[in-house]
Length: 482
Image (cartoon, rainbow, N blue to C red):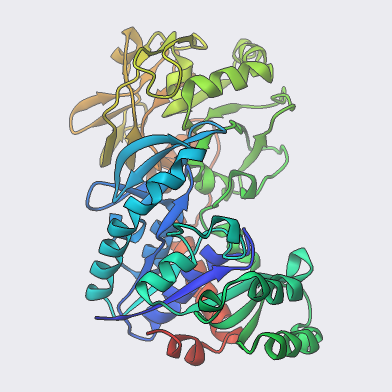
């Protein structure tokens, strides 16, 4: 059996996912067989795994940092919020059920067994497993039945390193305060601490660093400066996507739905020098100089159709089309472009039918079975090869399917209008493929940049690992694993 170490945060969004990715790449550089693990994740940004399931996109990036294929064991419990009150529960890659938030506590005790099963399997296959917590162990009101932080750490006997975010301020209180609220057994699981996202001269925090060590008795493993190149890695949050103002190239506007999903589709476009990508948020209008509007994936197609109309974006889209603009709908966005979305069984919520935007002559029927697959395809308009993945609940049919967006294994996929300006597809991740991205942009008269997106991600992970090695005591950190 290999060893394991868990990275927990003194709060949410302290940079755990990025730290784990960097540590995975650093361990790999030392010749270790390493794998990531997150017992429970809450995200609508999912990836399809090599073994045909789904996990959080962050764990897929961490697997890439390890140089291995993503598998469902890396994230055995994935919660995908569908409404403010409920979420779909995915266990070891497959949808188990949908529960209201207040009912999830009753379900959690059943989930520790598959969590430990997946962890044990990974640990038996690798020298080192680096575990990422969720939220913060300081949320002691959620401790009963916990499978994400200390509940898991104690059940699996995995030592913990606690991370504080100095960029938010109050990092001494974050870490010392966490120790103060933990019970004695949980606090004993913590072996060290890391200060993350420092800006400026790290030596200026020497006194604070020593104070934390003296107050807690935990070993400081390092102070990590802010890693600016994080923007070159797939974004964990749609609001983290780097935005660029309108320019002489292609002006792209993406609608930030309330339940936006798999928004990492946009990462390769956001880094193209000839593309100005803007996320259009609630209360904002679609700018009149937009060339292409992207309707991204959504965990609640009918709910986000209502959200779209509440923002007045349906009116903006009609004006955009009248001006000759283009629209691309991906997955849930594709479903919205049609005439109607039917959900007689209440797969996404209350049973019923919602009128679509009517830009494509297709209709979608929601189904309980979920399509999960990695695919190779050909873009019909350009003939360029594509790769991507499907992850959706729903079946779309109609006359505009006679003009497919792509072909997958010889079968038509997606739909287009006769003039080709409006298109929809279920294929996520299509822009990662350099050849397709180049052909797609050429269709708008824009040249793609010379860099390979995949190579940029790999090189950024290498720089991240070097960054960790410069500012963390990796020997001490890896020695804490057991």
